[in-house]
Length: 105
Image (cartoon, rainbow, N blue to C red; front, side, top):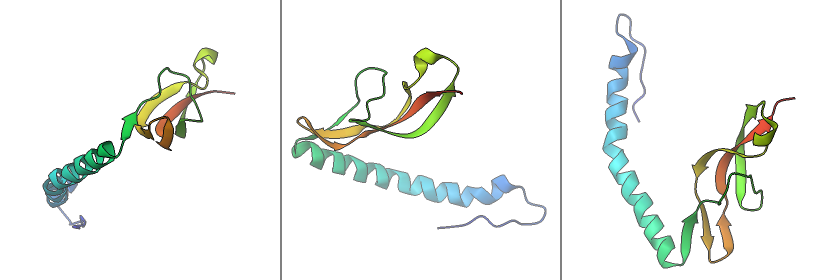
C-alpha cells in the first residue's frame, strides 16, 4: 500500500491522490467478495437482520459506542445502526452492531 510522505512545498491533497486511486481500484473487488459471501450465507439459511424497534436489546445487539443524551426517554435507545446482524432461523449467528444513547449524569 502506498503511504503519503510529506514533501516541502506540496499540499497534502496532491500526495493522497495515489492512495485514493489504489483504494478505488480495489473497492469493486471488495464489493464482489462481500456479495459472494452474503450469497453463500443466504444459501445456507443465514440472513441479515435489523432488530425491530428503537430500544437496545443486548440479546440481539452489540453496542460498540455510546451517544450522550439529556433526554431520559432516549436512554438506552438506538442512536445508530452500524452493521446488520445475521441469523439462521431463530438462532443468532452475529448480533447487530449499534451505537446507543446513554443518559448524561
